[in-house]
Length: 163
Image (cartoon, rainbow, N blue to C red; front, side):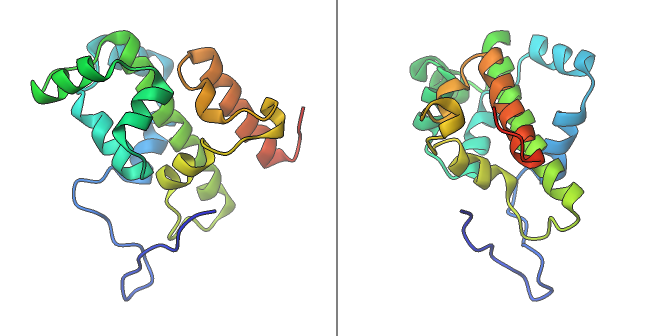
């Protein structure tokens, strides 16, 4: 499902300039509830959404749709170097946590070299799944309950348990 990674001569994936590393997503996934709440309240920089979309290899418009973010508002905030609202930030942080969850699962397996969790999540979110009645995980990313459902589905797939 993933594209072949670009490798350096040492066999490790070459980090892209300005790219958030999988460990940064894992940190967001493992952060305390209080830390995430404070981050939501402060709002995350709108420009960060563009970077997440780039790493997931999906157009920002598709990301806006999945998170149900108003395009004109977010684009204006990006241009003004402003922060997203608490509600908008919460959705983006939920997506970051999901990427971090995948990165952590792969790291726990013992061989994360060359694996791009953001890209994998970007592809996986678009796949219709029987466990969701044929819907795509992206269809549930606009609410915290939906993001929780998608996160549980990932955990269940790792354990081989399907509802």
